[in-house]
Length: 328
Image 1 (cartoon, rainbow, N blue to C red):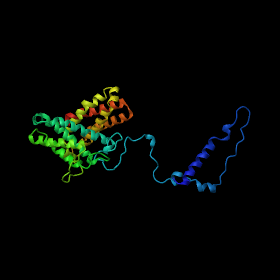
Image 2: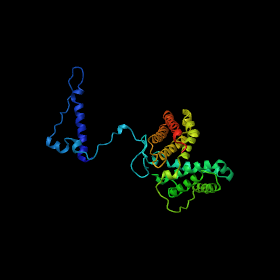
Image 3: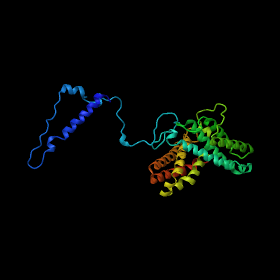
Image 4: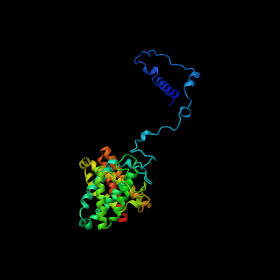
């Protein structure tokens, strides 16, 4: 706004005040006349025309008028900047960028938790072949998803340099862990050591030229990701919204699960994923995403009722979706 325009607004305000608070408004009651006041100012029209615009919006302002800020703040900034993924526009005021609903700390904590679980499952061949490979497949799938997100993450996050390489390694191990064999067990042991090195602060030597952009359909299968959501529901989500006291005591776990659900919902509805172009399926994913972001908002606002509502949306989405899609 230029100086002429600023002075115009200021002088307009003064004139308005003078017209509202006219001398008659201050007349004393009870037979006495009004107190003497200074006469109203007069202005030379030629001089005034040099200061005022006839129509301030037509002549004085450049660009668009400001947005209507009374509508309330957005939850997170959106925009076309790097990190947004195809078809990722999210309901509830969250942008399609990963960091708008998935803090870097959640990614790191999830990978640390996977490391601890892999330590328990990858111990001896008999345990692996007896069913441990199924757990390993889920852990490696979620790890591949996390590294895939890191390759696209629109902010600072650990392991970004090695992420594309690690994404492909864990995706391959997840695919090979569909069966319990000596080969899949030996590969799982290597992934176990990779996680130990990463969490411990060591670097992983990258070989080859991994594709920087993540092809989600080639990186993860749907079933292990849905299993991760199921486990999060049963072990963390539902317990954390059982009542208001549980909500207040378990906000950290609830935030982690809600952020993970939002991220997995984004992945599950990508076009290269199974049924990613099916309208009904995408609606279920969006309902899951909306429920998750509703919980994230509820945690910020310390609003138990809103958190419970978000959890109900998640449970409804999963219940309605599972019979049709979970086993693929």
